[in-house]
Image (tube, rainbow, N blue to C red; front, side, top):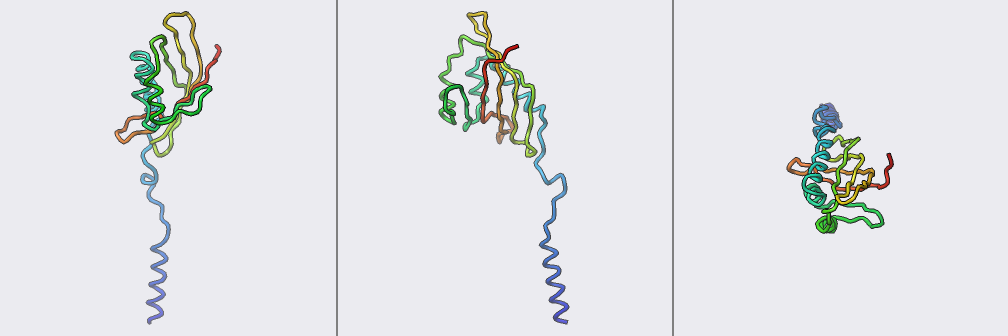
Length: 156
């Protein structure tokens, strides 16, 4: 009798330790749609056009954000914010258009990429290029970029 009880105990112990998957709806955090991150990037560009590059970047950079700029080491966190705050954007209007995006299944990290255009206020010339921004969803639900980079020289 003791052997039967002990055997039942051992079997039930091992069955209770079985690795069970949670239901599908509990496996991952809700996925945010690509549309949300694309719309954030478009709003970022619109703010740049309306209030200037500096104002837009200050609004949308994460406190630990990284800027990758030509002929420069990565500019990180407080140094990136300081770099942006000193930017003289009075002679340009910069806009961009996302052409693609992806988002992690967790819904809290994603990226956008596309083309940008810099128009000079006192000249007839424009500068075109491509960009990539990596976005992180903040605790308040807003998106801020954690990395921004671009390549100049896009021709038509």
